[in-house]
Structures are given as C-alpha cells and as structure tokens.
Image (cartoon, rainbow, N blue to C red):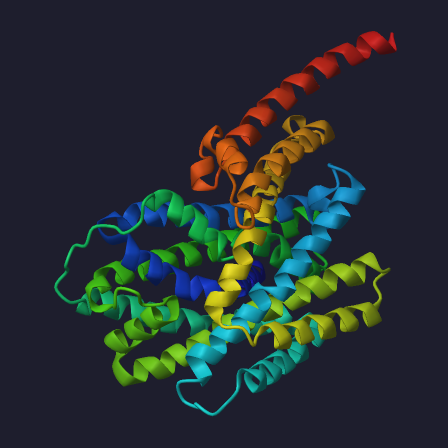
Length: 433
C-alpha cells in the first residue's frame, strides 16, 4: 500500500513538472490547424511530447544518476558541455516562458495595469521558496497541486467534447501534419524535461527513501507510466477539442487566444477563472521542476555544496524574471533554433541509454552522437543563413526538408557502429593472444 501511494505521488509530481506552458497552449493550436487530419498530428505530437520523454524517465530508472550520466559514454568533456547547454536553455527559455504565459493568460486579463515585471518577480520569488524547500517538492506537487490541474483540464475537455458546435470539417492548413506534430512536440521541451525532472525524481527519492536500487527502479518506471498516460489523455483531448471548435477561432488566432476561447466556450465566465488558476499552477510546477533540477545538478557537480544549490536557484530565478518580460510568441521563436540543435542529440542520448549495453558501447555512443550532431547542423543554420549551398545540402538529405535530416543518418550510424564494435570484439581476443 505504501509503495502504491509512493508511485502515484511521484507519478503525479512528474506529470506536473512536465505539464507547463507549452503543454497547455500548443495542442489546441495544433488541433485547430490540423483540421480533418488531427489524428495524424496527434500521433506526431505523441512521439516527441510523450513517448520520448517517457523513454527518458525509463533511462533515469536504469541509470539512477544525473544528466551527466546520459552523455559520459561519449566523453566526460562532451557530457559536461551538454549538461551546461541544456541547463542554460532550460533556465533561459522554458522556465521564463512559464512566467510569460502566466502573465498573459492569468494576470493581464484581470489586472490590466499590472506589469509583466511585477508578475515575474512575484512568480519567481514563490518558485525560489519552493526550490529551497527541496525535500518537500515532490510531496507538495504530487499530493496537492497536480490533482487540481488534472480536474480543471478534464472539465474543459469533457465539457468541450459534449457541447461542441456542429462540426465544420476544415481541411488541414499544415503541409506535413505528422511531421508538424513531431516538431511542435519539440516546443513542449518534454524530451529535455525528462532528463531534467527525471533527475529531480531520482534525487528526491534518495532524500526520502531507503529503498534498494531495484525497488527505486520499479517506482520510477511506474511513476513514469502514470505521468505518460496523463500526458497522452490530456494532449489528445486538447488537440481534439481544438479541432472540434476550429470554426469558432479567427484565422490568425494565437496559441493563447485559442486556449482562452476554448475555456470560455466550454465553461463560460467561470471557465476564464478556472483557466487562470490552471495556467498559473501548470506553469508554476514546471518552473519549480526546472530550477530544482538545475540547482541539483550544479550542487552535485560541486561536492554537494548547499551554497552552490542556493546560488544556482537565485541565478535561475533572476534569469526567469528578466526573460519573462518577453511575450510568449517571441520566446517560442527564440527557442526554435536552439531546439533544432539540442533536441536531436537529446533524443539519441535517451534512446542509447535504454538500449542493452551490448548494443550501446562507448564506441557506439561516440559514432552515433557525432553523426547526429553533424546532421543537425543544417537545421540549426537554416534559421540564420539563407543561401543556395545550405539549400543544396538539405535537398540531398532525406527528410531534411522536414527538419529531420538527422534521423536516417543516426539510424544507419547506429547499425554500422554496432557492426564495427562486434568486429572489434571478435578481433580483440586474437590480438591479446
């Protein structure tokens, strides 16, 4: 009974740390644009916003270390640089975005004179209070905040499905619905979040549990399944009602405007109040998870220094206040090139860490990550450089026109690297003799 309770608390806490700003505003927007192909968009979104993140939690259950352990088979230097880049992205983009969404959707509609600076300052002040009470984070999130988030979300979804207007089947406005779903899933930051908040879960369990490695592995895996099922249900519901109500939105409606409209149409005036509470809670729990995970990592890297933990938390919160002044759309645009660069590497690291060791040797890690890095460069540079040479390169790469030019090379290099490794293993005994 105690283990079941622990699994559900940790599962709910994981869900709340995953479910933030992007998770709320992106699915209805996708549903509206997907039209009659909303199902294919959902499948694409599921891959990068649910499946890969849950594999990330599975990798954490297997490693039970920190983010550093994800990349150490490539090299210690690579892992250090990777961790720094990921944490830098997290505290300068998705964490501040939670404050920006909270201001735009939960504060500004009711307090027009209130500035985003005031919102961000109070918001990250509260985040800091949660973070420094580190040992209680999972319990507070899992027991109290997550159930409220889920109840409000399910109310919007179920009322929306049962009261939807007569469906006007619009053709999709997306060129590649499945791929657009995959790429929009990048914007949730959930794959990156899995290796950040998964570390929070592992360290929290070490604080609060004397369980064995295998017992903790079981709890982490089952908590990840609960969080994943929750995300799948909510994402599918939000995409679907975005499709059902698509005819009621303006042609150029923004992501936040669509979510505001949905809450009003489903729950009336009280819906706007519920949505404000939902947005504030969902964004807040994600910000707590990001700042806590970042502070945990640097604390561990500096001989478990509590001073470093507090300094990192302060820096993360100050950056949140500063970047939180930007509007949501601007932060999303800034994030795109960074995501195109770091997401492929993150996905491949997650997958390699769940493969059996015999298929994921250090040599395999080095080759596959090197190839993934190389073939993700054109997608990254495409945001800054527009010339024929780069266009020619992308023309000759399968899936590059869909910003997935790294996928096939990564898969091929994984197979070839394993062939090389097996050949090397066969030759080693001969050389030794």
